[in-house]
Image (spheres, rainbow, N blue to C red):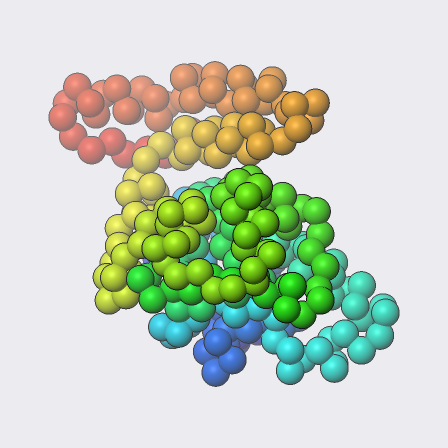
Length: 262
C-alpha cells in the first residue's frame, strides 16, 4: 500500500512523483523507498505517461537522505539492514533503468541519498537555492561501486572524488559548473520551467526518445556488455513507425506532429 509520504500525480502525459516528508526535509523511510518502486511501476505501464518528474514537497528540500529517526525500527538487526539495502537498491535501479525520460526537479537541499536519486534521473533542473552534498566521509559510511560509478559517469572521476573527499555542500552554480545539474532556475520559476520542459519532451516522438535513452545507457556500459544489436533494432523501429510518417507529414504541412508511440 502506497504511503502518504509519497505522492503520485498524472498531469496529462507527465507523471510526478513527490517525496512528501517536508517536516524532515523529505528524508526517506523504508516505506517511502517501497513507494518509489510502486509509483514507477504504475507510471511505466501507463502508455499515456511519457515523462516523469521527481521532486520533493515544499521549497526547502528535494531529498535530504535517509530518515535517521526510523533507523531503530528499520535497521535494528542484520536481517533488517539487508532488507533495507535491497529495497533501496530496487528504488535506485528502478529509477535509473526507467524506460521513459525522467527529470529531477531540485529545490533546496539535495543531500546523500537525494543526490543518488537525482543522479539516477536523466536530467536535473534545480532552483538557485539548491545545495548538494554527500556527507559519507563525515559519517564513516561506505558507498557501493554502482552508486559511485553513476556519479563519476556524470561529473567525471575528479569531481566525484571532490564531492566525496570534501563532504561539503556545493551550491547551484558549482553544481552546474561540474555538470551535476543541467539547468539552474530562480526558485519561483522552477516549477513552470520544469513543467514546460517535461511537456516539450512529452510532445516529441516517444520511440525516438526511448531509442536515444537506451543507446546512451549502452554507451555508459563496459564495451563487452553493450547490446549494439538492440540499439540498431530500435533505430529501425523508429524509421518503420507510423510516428516517422506523421513527423514527415507534419513538417511538410507546417503543423505540430501528433505522435502515438507506434
